[in-house]
Length: 483
Ligand SMILES: [Zn+2]
Image 1 (tube, rainbow, N blue to C red):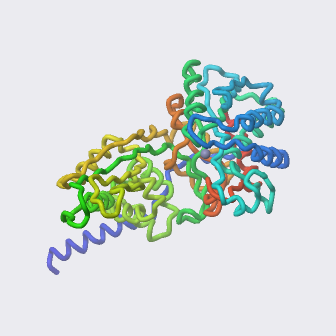
Image 2 (image 1 turned 90 degrees about the horizontal axis):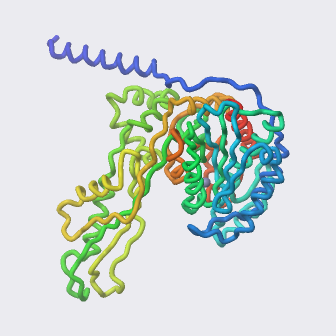
């Protein structure tokens, strides 16, 4: 046989052996495997309080203005009445009239404190959709094992679960080693500036810096990813936000004798070019760590690719990018959302304008995306790029810190054999404020959800199952008792 063919066959055999070995030995890096003893929960009381909590119409309508303050005040009074031990044994500070900060002094003041946070404002129910709800949106009705209502998932359930946990532990005489803070914002849905923003200022003045913080974020997801086990995604970062205008100009005049390209035509070409030029993604950083955990549980064919990313990296990336959810977690996304041009059908536009909304991956900045657009549109005449406003993605928290391990251990204690992965929050949370007083800001809701539950977020039929509420109480008890 020709020496070249022999060498080629040998190389192919070696390649197959390497691919086979990598696939067979593919394992997730170990994340906390601690077991915690079964935790008792007074589920009837938790359900009762959750139902009451939904009844308060703590709706955020617009930034900087609380329009229904008495509902917020009544919610605060409801917490006082329902959780007497918490209010007796912790120090509560009210910030900006409606946001709450509780300090639960630990036994060892030399240890860095931690923060458990959530928000009790909710988004409005979209007018006209009220009768599409199976139970009225502020009824808190219990039906077929679910509590219905605005805030059931986002995010009153977190607050109720935290309070139930603390109340139960306090009534058993528990005191944590570390000082634990709880903060409950009243305007997260409209920027969090006067709630979390002011809480952060207060904490800074008091010299408080948390080892870690835990806010709303991802979930234990079932059936949402192509693996057999549920996946608990603890988010370690939050994407940034920037809006950019693309402006095309033209001569104007009557539309009966148009130039070859009007401003609208130029703008359309620019938008097409932008959409065809996505930001680089890559399985590095958070996306890579997520895949390291998830990969070994994927179906065999995908496992071969995933365990040999040195060879199949670009195929893997292309495959993942075809899912909008995965794509959003891997790269800065581009969404053209608004258009305007001529005010009249027979008038040539002097200017055509498109607004593009981008969600920034931690590797990009408002400046770098502006540069990207300018590069992409090089050679386009009469088209300019204007950054409207924006903010960077959050810093990335460690997925190997003691805090992450502690949260992961509590996930295992409550949810059993699940895959734990770090992830990225694609929307905004109050943690955009807390990052400046927290070494590691994590974002995770201790609830198991499927496709149907996700749809209720900010939508119709938001609901929380009694089982999930119980698990959330167990989770926070586990977290708190490990501090
Ligand atoms: Zn929320």
